[in-house]
Amino acid sequence: MNQTEPLPALAAAATRLTTPCGGDADGLSWYRWGPESGVPVLLFHGGSGSWRHWARNIEALAAHRPVFAPDLPGLGTSSMPNDPFGPEEAAVALLMGVPEIVRGRFHLVGFSFGAMVAGLVAAQAQNLASLSLIGPAALGTLRQPVPLQKLRDKAGTDRREAHRANLNALMLHNPEAIDDTAIAIQEWNTVHARLRSRGFATSTRLRDALTHVTAPVQAVWGARDAVAYPALHERVDVLRATRPDATITLIPDTGHWAAYEAPDAVNNLLQDFLSRHDA
Image (cartoon, rainbow, N blue to C red; front, side):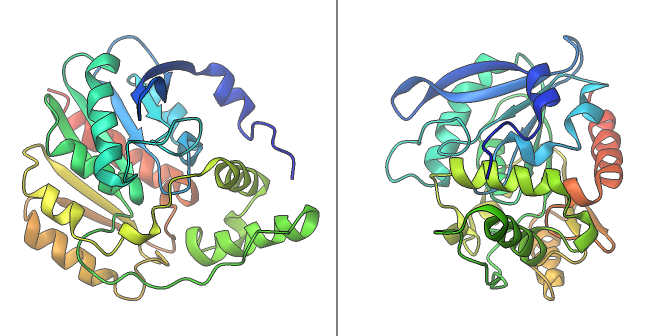
């Protein structure tokens, strides 16, 4: 498939910044949109992804505040973190970069694997205004196995249809949500992914980190999240037990990649939560 930029207008509107990662002085790529003023929000994408997981959210959020979306270490255009190439090492690189990217208070949003990494960062970050988790795992609950089609040796229409099948199996509940842009994002992300994140989803990393986060927390799941379905209630119960103060929302008829499948709902939830905790 064509490896051209799947989001040319959004990519062209971004300013790229870099901070150290894995021994590379410019190894961690950050992308910025929005005004100069306001409490900024940092968006951490999901596993095997890039900032493009936020394709339908960046412009809406950037209408109100600065938006920074890094490619997490080992993904997109960012270098691998230090060995052993896990979430903790990714969080170390991000924690080093945050003070160079933002000044003062900031909000943090993480999706899936990015939610786990966001939790690790939030547990140690200074000036954190709020933490939002979308489709989080790493709460110590079982991960629903989702069989995926192999992409190796596939090309052209066969590869495109494999992406469609995988998006429907793992990421998006409604088949009509799998448009050309979603497939192009999936292809770009897959080709550029080097850090493998699936093995961390059943750990307790996020649950443990949340006990050290003092900022307000919200969690959002698609009610038909294939990674958690049909035992989503177990994740909700663990989060409630860990953070009784957390705001929790389930979006009906929506899968794991809720920010893409239900962007209006996610954007409204984020902007409302962020605005309430700007001060």
